[in-house]
Image (cartoon, rainbow over all chains, first blue to last red; front, side, top):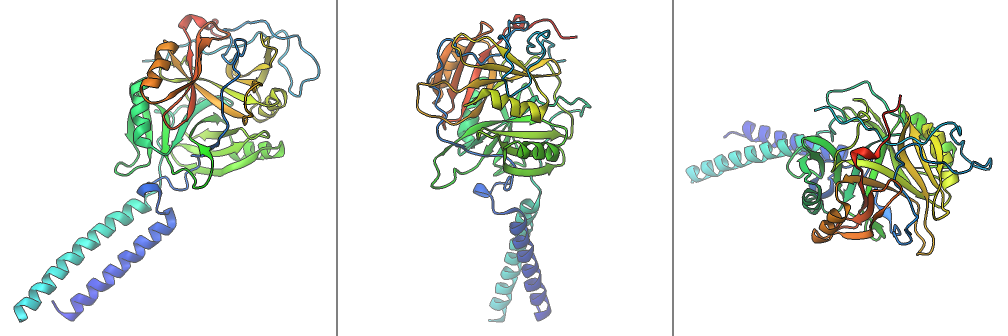
Length: 97
Length: 307
Protein backbone atom coordinates (compact mmCIF):
# COMPACT_ATOMS: atom_id res chain seq x y z
CA UNK A 1 0.00 0.00 0.00
CA UNK A 2 1.63 3.25 -1.07
CA UNK A 3 1.21 6.76 0.27
CA UNK A 4 -1.05 7.68 -2.66
CA UNK A 5 -3.42 4.83 -1.74
CA UNK A 6 -3.53 5.87 1.91
CA UNK A 7 -4.30 9.47 0.98
CA UNK A 8 -7.12 8.27 -1.23
CA UNK A 9 -8.62 6.29 1.62
CA UNK A 10 -8.37 9.14 4.09
CA UNK A 11 -9.97 11.47 1.56
CA UNK A 12 -12.82 9.06 0.87
CA UNK A 13 -13.44 8.55 4.57
CA UNK A 14 -13.55 12.30 5.10
CA UNK A 15 -16.07 12.72 2.28
CA UNK A 16 -18.33 10.05 3.71
CA UNK A 17 -18.20 11.49 7.19
CA UNK A 18 -19.17 14.83 5.66
CA UNK A 19 -22.07 13.15 3.83
CA UNK A 20 -23.21 11.56 7.09
CA UNK A 21 -23.04 14.89 8.84
CA UNK A 22 -25.08 16.53 6.08
CA UNK A 23 -27.68 13.76 6.35
CA UNK A 24 -27.95 14.33 10.09
CA UNK A 25 -28.39 18.07 9.59
CA UNK A 26 -31.01 17.49 6.88
CA UNK A 27 -33.14 14.98 8.76
CA UNK A 28 -32.06 15.06 12.38
CA UNK A 29 -31.01 12.06 14.39
CA UNK A 30 -34.58 10.96 15.10
CA UNK A 31 -36.27 9.31 18.03
CA UNK A 32 -34.49 6.05 18.64
CA UNK A 33 -32.92 6.33 15.24
CA UNK A 34 -36.33 6.85 13.64
CA UNK A 35 -37.14 8.28 10.26
CA UNK A 36 -40.12 10.51 10.99
CA UNK A 37 -38.31 13.46 12.47
CA UNK A 38 -40.04 16.69 11.57
CA UNK A 39 -43.22 14.79 10.81
CA UNK A 40 -46.32 16.95 10.85
CA UNK A 41 -48.29 15.12 13.52
CA UNK A 42 -47.47 13.41 16.76
CA UNK A 43 -48.83 16.06 19.08
CA UNK A 44 -49.29 14.95 22.66
CA UNK A 45 -52.45 16.16 24.35
CA UNK A 46 -52.28 18.10 27.57
CA UNK A 47 -53.48 16.09 30.53
CA UNK A 48 -57.10 16.59 31.43
CA UNK A 49 -59.18 14.49 29.04
CA UNK A 50 -61.17 12.92 31.83
CA UNK A 51 -64.39 11.26 30.84
CA UNK A 52 -66.45 11.52 33.98
CA UNK A 53 -69.86 13.10 33.74
CA UNK A 54 -71.15 11.16 30.76
CA UNK A 55 -74.66 10.71 32.09
CA UNK A 56 -77.32 8.51 30.50
CA UNK A 57 -78.55 11.36 28.32
CA UNK A 58 -75.11 12.36 27.09
CA UNK A 59 -75.32 11.36 23.45
CA UNK A 60 -72.42 11.45 21.02
CA UNK A 61 -73.46 8.95 18.34
CA UNK A 62 -74.77 9.91 14.93
CA UNK A 63 -78.49 9.73 14.40
CA UNK A 64 -80.02 6.99 12.33
CA UNK A 65 -81.35 9.71 10.13
CA UNK A 66 -84.52 11.70 10.18
CA UNK A 67 -84.59 12.28 13.96
CA UNK A 68 -86.43 15.20 15.43
CA UNK A 69 -84.40 18.34 15.67
CA UNK A 70 -84.38 20.84 18.49
CA UNK A 71 -86.64 23.82 18.27
CA UNK A 72 -84.54 26.30 16.36
CA UNK A 73 -83.68 29.61 17.93
CA UNK A 74 -82.09 32.46 16.09
CA UNK A 75 -79.31 32.94 18.59
CA UNK A 76 -76.85 30.37 17.31
CA UNK A 77 -73.34 31.29 16.31
CA UNK A 78 -73.61 28.73 13.52
CA UNK A 79 -76.07 28.70 10.63
CA UNK A 80 -78.50 25.84 11.28
CA UNK A 81 -79.50 23.65 8.38
CA UNK A 82 -82.95 24.53 7.06
CA UNK A 83 -85.75 23.03 9.17
CA UNK A 84 -87.02 21.21 6.10
CA UNK A 85 -83.90 19.06 6.02
CA UNK A 86 -83.88 15.89 8.07
CA UNK A 87 -80.81 14.89 10.04
CA UNK A 88 -78.36 12.88 7.99
CA UNK A 89 -76.72 9.67 9.12
CA UNK A 90 -73.75 7.50 8.16
CA UNK A 91 -73.23 5.96 4.73
CA UNK A 92 -74.90 2.61 4.22
CA UNK A 93 -73.06 1.44 1.15
CA UNK A 94 -70.71 -1.45 1.93
CA UNK A 95 -67.16 -1.41 0.70
CA UNK A 96 -66.60 -3.02 -2.66
CA UNK A 97 -64.70 -6.27 -2.34
CA UNK B 1 9.04 -6.41 10.25
CA UNK B 2 8.07 -5.33 6.77
CA UNK B 3 5.64 -8.23 6.46
CA UNK B 4 4.03 -7.27 9.78
CA UNK B 5 3.67 -3.65 8.67
CA UNK B 6 2.24 -4.76 5.35
CA UNK B 7 -0.35 -6.94 7.10
CA UNK B 8 -1.30 -4.11 9.44
CA UNK B 9 -1.85 -1.80 6.50
CA UNK B 10 -3.79 -4.52 4.72
CA UNK B 11 -6.08 -4.95 7.71
CA UNK B 12 -6.42 -1.19 8.05
CA UNK B 13 -7.38 -1.00 4.41
CA UNK B 14 -10.12 -3.62 4.79
CA UNK B 15 -11.31 -2.06 8.01
CA UNK B 16 -11.61 1.32 6.36
CA UNK B 17 -13.51 -0.19 3.48
CA UNK B 18 -15.99 -1.76 5.92
CA UNK B 19 -16.41 1.56 7.74
CA UNK B 20 -16.94 3.34 4.43
CA UNK B 21 -19.59 0.82 3.39
CA UNK B 22 -21.38 1.12 6.74
CA UNK B 23 -21.22 4.91 6.69
CA UNK B 24 -22.61 4.96 3.17
CA UNK B 25 -25.57 2.80 4.23
CA UNK B 26 -26.25 4.93 7.32
CA UNK B 27 -26.01 8.15 5.34
CA UNK B 28 -28.36 6.77 2.68
CA UNK B 29 -30.98 5.70 5.24
CA UNK B 30 -30.76 8.95 7.18
CA UNK B 31 -30.92 11.08 4.08
CA UNK B 32 -33.96 9.19 2.73
CA UNK B 33 -37.06 11.36 3.03
CA UNK B 34 -39.83 10.17 5.36
CA UNK B 35 -42.42 8.98 2.89
CA UNK B 36 -45.98 8.11 3.79
CA UNK B 37 -48.10 5.78 1.67
CA UNK B 38 -51.04 7.18 -0.31
CA UNK B 39 -54.37 7.27 1.43
CA UNK B 40 -56.29 5.71 -1.44
CA UNK B 41 -54.99 2.98 -3.73
CA UNK B 42 -55.60 3.16 -6.63
CA UNK B 43 -55.91 6.93 -6.51
CA UNK B 44 -59.41 8.33 -6.95
CA UNK B 45 -60.87 11.70 -7.85
CA UNK B 46 -63.22 11.62 -4.84
CA UNK B 47 -63.02 14.45 -2.33
CA UNK B 48 -65.18 14.77 0.76
CA UNK B 49 -64.32 18.00 2.53
CA UNK B 50 -65.08 17.77 6.23
CA UNK B 51 -64.78 14.00 6.46
CA UNK B 52 -62.31 12.40 8.88
CA UNK B 53 -60.21 10.50 6.36
CA UNK B 54 -57.30 9.33 8.47
CA UNK B 55 -56.50 8.78 12.13
CA UNK B 56 -53.09 8.61 13.77
CA UNK B 57 -51.80 7.72 17.19
CA UNK B 58 -48.78 9.27 18.84
CA UNK B 59 -47.32 6.97 21.45
CA UNK B 60 -44.09 6.54 23.36
CA UNK B 61 -44.35 2.75 22.93
CA UNK B 62 -44.94 1.63 19.36
CA UNK B 63 -44.33 -2.05 20.12
CA UNK B 64 -46.79 -1.96 23.03
CA UNK B 65 -49.38 -0.16 20.91
CA UNK B 66 -49.06 -2.74 18.16
CA UNK B 67 -49.62 -5.56 20.64
CA UNK B 68 -52.65 -3.81 22.14
CA UNK B 69 -54.46 -2.89 18.92
CA UNK B 70 -53.58 -6.16 17.27
CA UNK B 71 -55.15 -8.02 20.19
CA UNK B 72 -58.17 -5.72 20.28
CA UNK B 73 -59.10 -5.27 16.63
CA UNK B 74 -56.94 -7.77 14.77
CA UNK B 75 -54.96 -5.00 13.10
CA UNK B 76 -51.68 -5.94 11.50
CA UNK B 77 -48.83 -3.50 10.99
CA UNK B 78 -46.46 -2.41 8.30
CA UNK B 79 -43.39 -0.52 9.44
CA UNK B 80 -42.40 2.37 7.22
CA UNK B 81 -38.91 1.87 5.83
CA UNK B 82 -38.36 -1.15 8.11
CA UNK B 83 -35.62 -1.50 10.66
CA UNK B 84 -35.85 1.11 13.37
CA UNK B 85 -38.85 2.82 11.83
CA UNK B 86 -40.87 4.86 14.28
CA UNK B 87 -44.01 4.94 12.14
CA UNK B 88 -46.24 2.00 11.34
CA UNK B 89 -49.39 1.74 9.27
CA UNK B 90 -52.14 -0.38 10.82
CA UNK B 91 -53.97 -2.63 8.40
CA UNK B 92 -57.29 -4.41 8.63
CA UNK B 93 -57.78 -7.12 6.02
CA UNK B 94 -54.91 -5.50 4.12
CA UNK B 95 -56.49 -2.03 4.12
CA UNK B 96 -54.76 0.86 5.88
CA UNK B 97 -56.85 1.98 8.85
CA UNK B 98 -54.51 4.10 10.97
CA UNK B 99 -51.01 5.40 11.48
CA UNK B 100 -48.99 4.86 14.65
CA UNK B 101 -46.13 7.20 15.39
CA UNK B 102 -43.60 6.65 18.13
CA UNK B 103 -42.31 9.80 19.69
CA UNK B 104 -40.82 10.55 23.08
CA UNK B 105 -43.05 12.43 25.50
CA UNK B 106 -41.61 15.94 25.74
CA UNK B 107 -39.48 15.90 28.89
CA UNK B 108 -40.85 17.82 31.82
CA UNK B 109 -44.29 18.23 30.23
CA UNK B 110 -47.57 16.81 31.51
CA UNK B 111 -48.87 15.35 28.28
CA UNK B 112 -50.60 12.19 27.18
CA UNK B 113 -50.70 10.08 24.00
CA UNK B 114 -53.66 10.71 21.74
CA UNK B 115 -55.40 9.67 18.57
CA UNK B 116 -55.60 12.46 16.02
CA UNK B 117 -58.17 12.69 13.25
CA UNK B 118 -57.27 14.18 9.88
CA UNK B 119 -60.13 16.06 8.26
CA UNK B 120 -60.28 16.38 4.48
CA UNK B 121 -59.73 19.76 2.84
CA UNK B 122 -58.98 20.71 -0.75
CA UNK B 123 -56.32 23.30 0.10
CA UNK B 124 -54.43 23.06 3.39
CA UNK B 125 -52.93 26.54 3.23
CA UNK B 126 -56.26 28.17 2.46
CA UNK B 127 -57.92 26.22 5.29
CA UNK B 128 -55.14 27.23 7.65
CA UNK B 129 -55.62 30.89 6.75
CA UNK B 130 -59.37 30.66 7.38
CA UNK B 131 -58.79 28.85 10.67
CA UNK B 132 -56.28 31.44 11.88
CA UNK B 133 -58.60 34.27 10.91
CA UNK B 134 -61.24 32.69 13.16
CA UNK B 135 -59.15 32.17 16.26
CA UNK B 136 -57.32 28.89 15.62
CA UNK B 137 -53.62 28.32 16.21
CA UNK B 138 -51.06 26.34 14.27
CA UNK B 139 -49.63 23.31 16.05
CA UNK B 140 -47.65 22.01 13.07
CA UNK B 141 -47.17 24.11 9.94
CA UNK B 142 -48.32 22.60 6.62
CA UNK B 143 -45.97 20.12 5.05
CA UNK B 144 -46.22 18.05 1.88
CA UNK B 145 -45.57 14.32 1.70
CA UNK B 146 -45.69 13.54 -2.01
CA UNK B 147 -47.71 10.33 -1.90
CA UNK B 148 -49.87 11.31 1.09
CA UNK B 149 -50.59 14.94 0.33
CA UNK B 150 -50.29 18.16 2.31
CA UNK B 151 -51.20 18.26 5.98
CA UNK B 152 -51.10 20.49 9.02
CA UNK B 153 -52.14 20.30 12.65
CA UNK B 154 -54.24 23.08 14.16
CA UNK B 155 -55.91 23.89 17.46
CA UNK B 156 -59.41 25.34 17.33
CA UNK B 157 -60.21 28.54 19.27
CA UNK B 158 -60.90 26.50 22.43
CA UNK B 159 -57.68 24.50 22.02
CA UNK B 160 -59.05 21.20 20.67
CA UNK B 161 -56.38 19.85 18.35
CA UNK B 162 -57.21 18.43 14.92
CA UNK B 163 -55.36 17.85 11.66
CA UNK B 164 -56.26 18.76 8.10
CA UNK B 165 -55.19 16.82 5.05
CA UNK B 166 -55.43 17.43 1.31
CA UNK B 167 -54.93 13.88 0.12
CA UNK B 168 -53.01 13.63 -3.14
CA UNK B 169 -54.65 10.28 -3.93
CA UNK B 170 -58.22 11.41 -3.26
CA UNK B 171 -60.39 10.76 -0.23
CA UNK B 172 -61.70 7.36 0.85
CA UNK B 173 -65.14 6.56 -0.49
CA UNK B 174 -68.23 7.13 1.63
CA UNK B 175 -68.91 3.57 2.68
CA UNK B 176 -70.07 2.08 5.95
CA UNK B 177 -67.05 1.36 8.13
CA UNK B 178 -66.42 -2.30 8.83
CA UNK B 179 -65.98 -3.48 12.42
CA UNK B 180 -62.45 -2.53 13.44
CA UNK B 181 -62.47 0.64 11.31
CA UNK B 182 -63.03 4.24 12.39
CA UNK B 183 -66.68 5.13 12.11
CA UNK B 184 -67.29 8.38 13.96
CA UNK B 185 -65.76 11.40 15.66
CA UNK B 186 -66.92 13.89 18.24
CA UNK B 187 -65.54 17.16 19.44
CA UNK B 188 -66.16 18.05 23.07
CA UNK B 189 -66.23 21.78 23.57
CA UNK B 190 -66.87 24.29 26.28
CA UNK B 191 -69.17 26.13 23.90
CA UNK B 192 -70.59 23.79 21.23
CA UNK B 193 -72.39 26.63 19.55
CA UNK B 194 -69.26 28.63 18.72
CA UNK B 195 -67.26 25.46 18.09
CA UNK B 196 -69.82 24.37 15.48
CA UNK B 197 -69.67 27.82 13.93
CA UNK B 198 -65.88 27.58 13.68
CA UNK B 199 -65.94 24.16 12.01
CA UNK B 200 -68.80 25.22 9.76
CA UNK B 201 -66.75 28.17 8.55
CA UNK B 202 -63.71 25.97 8.01
CA UNK B 203 -65.30 22.93 6.35
CA UNK B 204 -68.64 24.23 5.11
CA UNK B 205 -70.63 21.82 7.26
CA UNK B 206 -74.36 21.75 7.56
CA UNK B 207 -75.21 21.88 11.26
CA UNK B 208 -78.12 20.00 12.81
CA UNK B 209 -79.22 20.53 16.40
CA UNK B 210 -80.58 17.35 17.96
CA UNK B 211 -82.82 17.04 20.96
CA UNK B 212 -80.92 15.88 23.98
CA UNK B 213 -82.18 14.21 27.14
CA UNK B 214 -79.69 15.93 29.42
CA UNK B 215 -80.23 19.44 28.11
CA UNK B 216 -76.69 19.68 26.77
CA UNK B 217 -76.18 20.62 23.16
CA UNK B 218 -75.65 17.80 20.69
CA UNK B 219 -74.91 19.11 17.22
CA UNK B 220 -74.26 17.08 14.10
CA UNK B 221 -71.84 18.32 11.47
CA UNK B 222 -72.56 16.98 8.01
CA UNK B 223 -71.25 17.25 4.48
CA UNK B 224 -72.36 15.52 1.28
CA UNK B 225 -75.56 14.71 3.23
CA UNK B 226 -73.66 12.39 5.57
CA UNK B 227 -73.09 12.91 9.27
CA UNK B 228 -69.36 13.52 9.80
CA UNK B 229 -68.97 14.39 13.46
CA UNK B 230 -70.83 15.54 16.53
CA UNK B 231 -70.19 18.56 18.68
CA UNK B 232 -70.94 18.06 22.35
CA UNK B 233 -70.76 20.21 25.41
CA UNK B 234 -68.13 19.04 27.87
CA UNK B 235 -70.13 17.45 30.65
CA UNK B 236 -70.03 19.27 33.94
CA UNK B 237 -69.68 17.92 37.44
CA UNK B 238 -66.20 16.49 37.06
CA UNK B 239 -62.69 17.92 37.13
CA UNK B 240 -62.05 20.58 34.50
CA UNK B 241 -60.91 19.15 31.22
CA UNK B 242 -59.73 20.62 28.01
CA UNK B 243 -61.74 20.56 24.77
CA UNK B 244 -60.76 17.68 22.52
CA UNK B 245 -61.68 15.44 19.63
CA UNK B 246 -62.53 11.78 20.19
CA UNK B 247 -62.54 9.13 17.45
CA UNK B 248 -64.66 5.97 17.50
CA UNK B 249 -64.00 2.49 16.14
CA UNK B 250 -66.94 0.42 15.00
CA UNK B 251 -67.37 -2.73 17.04
CA UNK B 252 -69.95 -5.51 17.05
CA UNK B 253 -69.96 -5.99 20.82
CA UNK B 254 -68.90 -2.94 22.84
CA UNK B 255 -69.22 -4.76 26.17
CA UNK B 256 -67.00 -7.59 25.00
CA UNK B 257 -64.41 -5.28 23.45
CA UNK B 258 -64.35 -3.07 26.55
CA UNK B 259 -63.66 -6.16 28.67
CA UNK B 260 -60.84 -7.06 26.30
CA UNK B 261 -59.37 -3.57 26.69
CA UNK B 262 -58.83 -4.23 30.38
CA UNK B 263 -57.33 -7.65 29.71
CA UNK B 264 -54.85 -6.07 27.29
CA UNK B 265 -53.70 -3.45 29.78
CA UNK B 266 -55.97 -0.57 28.81
CA UNK B 267 -58.69 1.16 30.81
CA UNK B 268 -62.39 1.74 30.39
CA UNK B 269 -63.08 5.46 30.80
CA UNK B 270 -66.80 5.41 30.07
CA UNK B 271 -68.61 2.11 30.51
CA UNK B 272 -70.63 0.83 27.55
CA UNK B 273 -74.09 2.35 27.46
CA UNK B 274 -76.86 2.82 24.93
CA UNK B 275 -76.60 5.98 22.84
CA UNK B 276 -78.99 7.86 20.62
CA UNK B 277 -79.04 5.26 17.85
CA UNK B 278 -79.71 2.38 20.23
CA UNK B 279 -76.27 0.81 19.98
CA UNK B 280 -73.70 0.72 22.76
CA UNK B 281 -70.98 3.34 23.04
CA UNK B 282 -67.94 3.32 25.32
CA UNK B 283 -64.74 5.29 25.79
CA UNK B 284 -61.52 3.42 26.51
CA UNK B 285 -57.81 4.13 26.67
CA UNK B 286 -54.86 2.05 25.54
CA UNK B 287 -52.07 1.16 28.02
CA UNK B 288 -50.37 4.52 27.50
CA UNK B 289 -53.58 6.49 28.04
CA UNK B 290 -54.60 7.33 24.47
CA UNK B 291 -58.39 7.55 24.50
CA UNK B 292 -60.73 6.37 21.78
CA UNK B 293 -64.34 5.40 21.50
CA UNK B 294 -66.09 2.13 20.74
CA UNK B 295 -69.37 2.30 18.88
CA UNK B 296 -71.77 -0.41 17.88
CA UNK B 297 -73.49 0.24 14.60
CA UNK B 298 -75.66 -2.38 13.00
CA UNK B 299 -76.21 -2.35 9.27
CA UNK B 300 -79.84 -1.56 9.98
CA UNK B 301 -78.96 1.53 12.01
CA UNK B 302 -78.65 3.83 9.02
CA UNK B 303 -81.40 5.36 7.01
CA UNK B 304 -81.71 4.68 3.32
CA UNK B 305 -78.94 5.96 1.07
CA UNK B 306 -79.32 9.67 0.36
CA UNK B 307 -80.19 10.81 -3.07
